[in-house]
Amino acid sequence: MRSYTVPVPWAAGYGLARTLLALGTLGTLVFSDASTLFREVSTVGRYPLCQGVNSGGAFCLVPEGHYDAMRWACCLVLVAAASGWRPRLTAVPHAYVAFSVFTGIAIPDGGDQITWILTLLIALVAVADPRRWHWRPWPRQEGPLSRQRTRWALLGVSALVVARIQMSVLYFQSCVAKLPHAEWADGSALYYWVNNYDFGAPYWLRPALQAVVDHPLGVAAMTWGPLVLEIALAGALLLPQRVRWMLLPAGVLFHLGIAVVMGLWSFALAMCAGLLLLLAPLGHDPDLTRLLRRPPRAAAAPPKKEDPLEAPALI
Image (tube, rainbow, N blue to C red):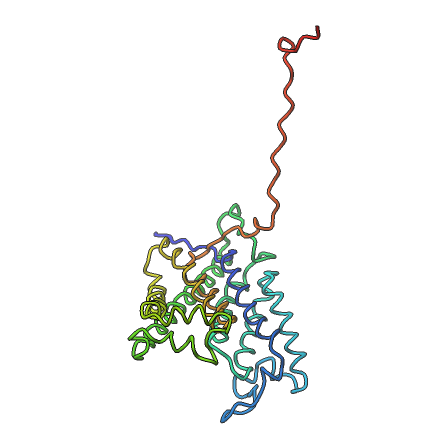
């Protein structure tokens, strides 16, 4: 009978993605007060709406005057999740907070949505993670998994595969949705984005970017470059692993650039977490704890014994 091997999903690689997702939501809650997050939206109503499934969110469980208290309670959950402590205990609360933020705040962005989806999928991995910290590599010397743990591993790997497909579809849709617009087709779209006063470049960066987008080749490269990268990321699952490793820094720099220019930091962190899930191998387990360990000192060489025949003469 043919047998199949399932990679162990409880690795430091997926733990880093958990941390990035938690930090993105944490930044939204820490740097935005209740009056900013929860307000009246024209033609929709006052957030949180607390209708249907959304009524199960954390901010629908408290009266309006206690939104700030709930906001800080959610921050504590996110700090615990970002730290990597006890993934099996913090995974479901983390997913619940991500759901509460996405459904509860007045103006969520795409980063809040992808964070909620990815944290839900990652929770299926983390609920069976037996490690105390998700930074620790999986002990390879443990041998084959038990039957019950193998089932949990299969569920976790399946969830990670769904997350990878989700990210691939997201990048494909992001690229294809731009193509019908004339500004993206003729290579001038980034000229308008850089000069947009709501989402454009900050004032300290605008002169440098303006010099680029004022040149035809510069604005075309800045416009078409993201399209090429997005379609490459969409097809990354069909590419060899060595090519995926090359796409990872390119994708991270791309999203960090969007964060610097447009200020979408929570979106950038969510997408960087998604890139890790998309491009790293399943069960990728870099030993991140070695960064915190002090390198061992080299043992001092034992003193050389003098040969009496080679000892210096005294007279």
